Length: 132
Image 1: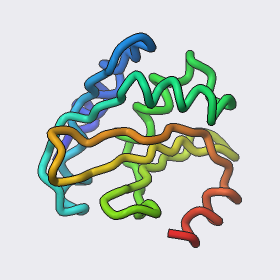
Image 2: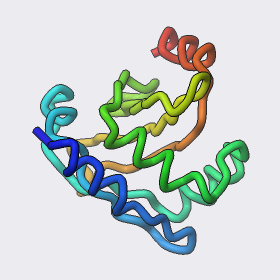
Image 3: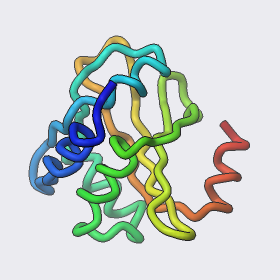
Image 4: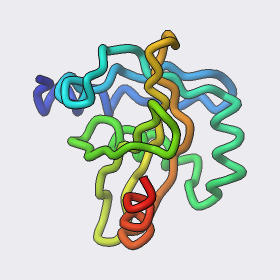
């Protein structure tokens, strides 16, 4: 189990380079245990960053570090994505918004790969959870 200090160190270490692929800290052990997954590096590819900028313009570039850190390492909740081995990691960031990161957690890949990063309000989050 990761301590509060270890989680904060992971959050503080995130510094997204928008011109390259990024390797983020491994997910918290308690989350991996609950999901039945073995630890792997978390990869955010440049191509995903570029697509995310187009598909989720509500996420300002200066928010990426914060939103990723919160959703991945700050005691997230999670629920299955629409595809096999996809999981949504979610953390409440203010009264009405949540940070949500969709991760492909395939056994056959060397990394867990981030697919989407977004801010989502409580109502849209509820709707999304019903579809999963």
